[in-house]
Amino acid sequence: MRLKLSYQEHPKHSELVSCVTWGSSSELYSVGDDHLILKWDFKSGETTQVAPLQKGTYVTHIDWLPAQAAGGGRKQSSRPEIFVLTCTDGRFLLVSSLGRVEKAVEAHKGAVLGALWSHDGTALLTNGEDGAVKIWSRSGMLRTSLAQSASPVYSTSWSPDSDQVLYTNGKSLVIRPLQPAAKPTHWKAHDGVILVADWSTANNTIVSGGEDRKYKLWDCYGRCLYSSLLHDSPIASLSWSPDGELFSVGAFNTLRLCDKSGWSHCLEKPSTGTIGALTWSSDGTQFACACSNGQTLLAQVVNRHLEWHNLEAVVGEDSIIRVKDVLTDAEERLGT
Image (spheres, rainbow, N blue to C red):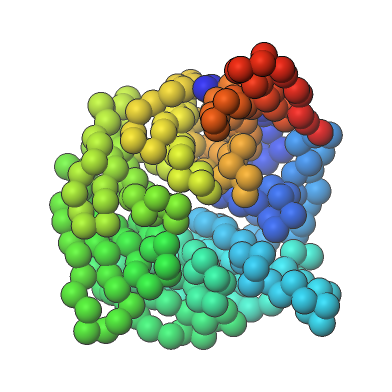
């Protein structure tokens, strides 16, 4: 199993790419410090500008409203899809897929460092430089201030059932249930500040990374399942694949693909600077990376082997899947 990397000869963004996300129709969107929101077509290599941002507006995170929450019925089919942008000025913006800012909300003191829709799209979770963790309605109304820390909260994640929230607190990880009377789970996870964490909806396992240059795996009770060796630089980004079988790790000029037990299957050293954000496509075949040199990197998982009874499937390049019956040696190629 390895990664096939695709990137531009000349970056489409003129400055750092801060975040990337996949739309409901598998389009890729990127946001940069050049105040541009771009929509990508990697097959043709073309980009479309969705909307320019106001000068002075710097985006830290983007997240698309889950497709099942966007309204798929006949009466709602014309409703514009929504994504959220978080900004360094303390606001988050609800933006339609057409690029129109539907609502701007003053959310935190200092930068808003992240925002994530719940898995059903009914709630929005934000975290900030002010140490606050807050939950908002889909329309941007504050529901609750869930937690307040003394240090910035760099990363959050919903539990698989969206009834608990994981957030970073310095060198520790905290799992806080949404019920006010429930006791949170808190443990020291790293020897340096934790910069990123993700909770898999498929396998209920947490992966975290930080300034101690390690990534670690945890169960939901805070027990360590795996700890990596030291990397050359802090872990800046990581993300689970939708099926929970793989996760990707980003750092300075470093991209790693690991299985759910923590073992590394592929290490790439692209000259991209820090990979500050990662996001998987819904089918789990590829993920996109936001890079500090202005590149938007696409990493496709190839040579992945899957077995079922007497059938073996290998995911190759260019979306070709080779299926082989090991009993009869019959082989078939599937692809688009």
